[in-house]
Amino acid sequence: TEADESKELLKSILETFGERFPKTREFSDFTRTHFSESNPIDAPDESLLQWMTGEETLFRILERHIVAERLKKGFGEHGDDVDEFIGFSLSVQNRRKSRVGHAFENHIEEILLQNSVSFDRGKKTEGKQTPDFLFPGQKQYLSPGFDSSLLRMLGAKTTCKERWRQVLAEAKRIELKHLITLEPAISEDQTNQMSEMNLQLVVPENIQQTYSNLQRQDLMSFKEFIEEVKHTQSAL
Image (cartoon, rainbow, N blue to C red; front, side, top):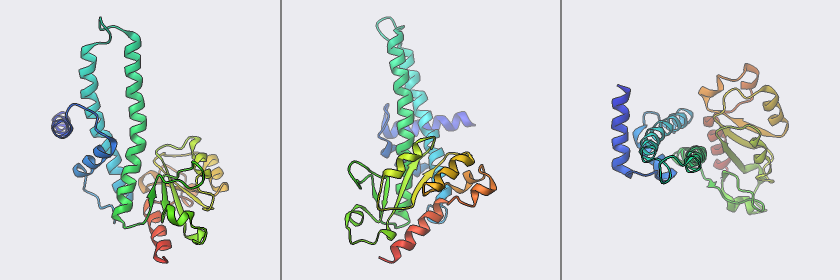
């Protein structure tokens, strides 16, 4: 049953990490050892979604366990300190939000590595701007003699909302920016705006089904993005 499976997974998590939240990178690595059915070279889109869903499942199992233990202790001297409880609750919410973004980047990085693509993660371009992924890397980007048509960048945001605009300023030498997201069914108004601003949306294949037929003509899969980057790098 699902409950038995959760118990087994919790046991495995606690044996590996103990009663704590591990660093996201450690947890992402752990996730991939448990969910390895799809091949990141043949099916990068599938692998990315499988690992993200897998990590979410494992994290919620661990979180439920740690939070339940903390709730049993109560908050403050008499166990009913509301402010202390609210502070704890906020820390739980913030951990969820920051962790999912890091997990997304971790799994993208692993897939790029397995596909033998050259890139740098989180390296500066201009000033304080740091695209999530820069291809082939910072050294080439900062070298004026390097052909800018062979440079690519990939922003990674699990949800876009209005934050997709941040990506536009992250690498001046790269005219067409790429942004990978897991957000389903972004409105046509917004995807039109993205196109107008030279932003190419990269959406895993399964999530593309939530977009209109017209929008889907302009979407790129993660596999297609990797193929394009490999093509630009074959010239190096």
